[in-house]
Length: 341
Image 1 (cartoon, rainbow, N blue to C red):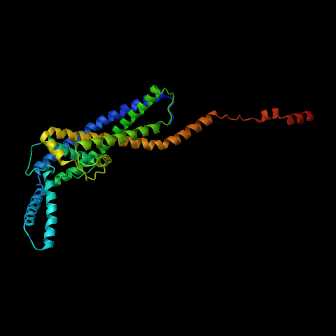
Image 2: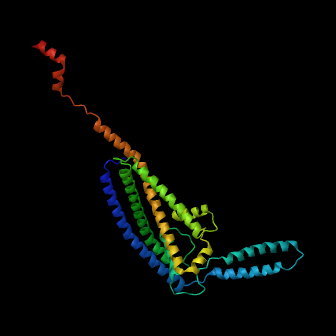
């Protein structure tokens, strides 16, 4: 794509950015209203009115008692080597389980019903609502009651279309800003009067920006919640989250969450909000990149059409010759007329 009238294109891009930003702000307010309302409703349903005790705590107590008995049996002596080998293997498993329990993530599900909404529980169900409306579906936080599951269906039907429109509007805004910056750079810095391969340049910048965001987000996760994981694992986690695949096979380091809780509930809440903001920005960049990538294929066809149009304009059109003009310039007809006379 070749841009010749730069001022006109810049004006159109400005209008596009304004319209996209206005649309994004409108739907973003609606989306966050739905997310916050859903977070409050899910808290009072799941944690207060329809509270279901966590089964993992009772199972963990039973397994811990069994492990303690096995550890006690290991201290005794037996003449049967097979029994001693089996006890040794179970002892190793129980020792590993004890280590895991020491750094286990503090469960958001309390031992009893809780009807006081604080920042921790609000952050918990806020994270759940974000995974619902953006179709991530980690499965780490899920409703256990029938009303909660019914409301999940309702909020998904309402929230997913709003989140999709919001993300596309944000992506168009980012895409328009990148286009405006590219045009301004080539016009002001490079002093060019026309811009060639415009869509390819936009796609290249958006690919680079998206990859940079993924790498920087992975670096942030490496320092803030994934101390035990490698840097590639953090990149993998960000990519799975950004593309809404949402396997749920990786979680932040439990020690980091414990430190956040001991430091301040607000600190944990801000951390969750930052994760949500990071996801929305990277997800919108992915949407902008896909939009630019699909338009690159049309650039060659548009270029061919432009060249054909220019060729048609420059090619001289032959003037049709009438019969009278042809007779006047034909010498044979003039000679025949003279003989007849």
